[in-house]
Length: 452
Ligand code: PHE
Image (cartoon, rainbow, N blue to C red; front, side, top):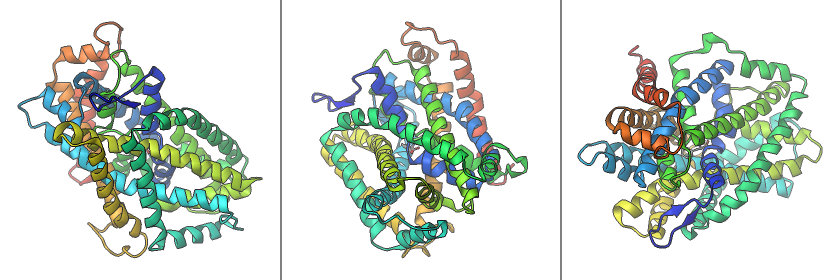
């Protein structure tokens, strides 16, 4: 992606750029950190099944809706609602998306900061320990520390800032074109390794054999939240990116490729983590800290472990950056286009807010562990509010908006590239946007608050 000097808007140069950036946004800590911990805390197989259902039945149509809104209006999320419905109140959903983007950036940077710590420790040899329980202790010492997690969160946000403010997204994109396939390759290698562990079959059974008694209202809400989070969906991220697509980008195909690759990476992460969890005698229900305790133990068991470890955590930082750049772009595009701010100023504002909230989230594992919002720490509350509430709600509004209120001609034009390609699934997408996605999301919401 480059920044157009005249309009101050970013643009994608190539077709590959489109897929690379949307997949770059989708693939990140959501797949490698959040998916395994959510699946682990919610019963494994049943969660996985519901998650995949939400990705393809609700996620793909809603990505199409966001793509149409973005490319059709060439605007940020707020502008997109305003242009398509000048007199309506739909734009309020745009503000909700912007809020969600800042909330996510705050806690996401904390986890990216943990990744930075683990990367440097792997390089410096600080990760050589002898048993899985030592890795557990090491992580809890680190995360409860009042200083180091905060410093790393800020360092990560500064790197994110520099990339955004200098408009060097192109460089990062080129780099990730090489490094992302490398991350994929590493994941495959670790998968094979995990499959050779002695309790591998227990791990795989946990992940792939659904125990239907585990399907509860709370679990359905978590699986839906995870699908939205992992697809960067429901907050205008895909709308903002699609506003930089060319007129020839095939929206339907891009949506399916993005969802497919994103799901594949999450599954690989699951296949790496769960055999190891069972083989090393750990608990799948550890929560947000799970992956940071299991992965080092896996690397430790490999020959040349610290080399694998450094490489992996480095690539994970990069995958996180391509995601945080995309979430920052939502509010930056809004501030520049709607509020007339300079790109640099907008980037400052975005970063400073995330630094303040990020610090609160970073401290919520240690000094601020007792400060609770609705019974949750800052970190958990931010995560819950954005993933389980704001994103599905944003997705529901986008699907109702595009399905019911936007002109059918606009939809057809967007999905067929103004009639130049055939798009057979048009009727199906519209049906999902009108009926399936909104009712599905509403049912899960009502169910989770006990109304159904
Ligand atoms: N989808 C990203 C991930 O899986 C996180 C993200 C959420 C990015 C929302 C942008 C917007 O890591």
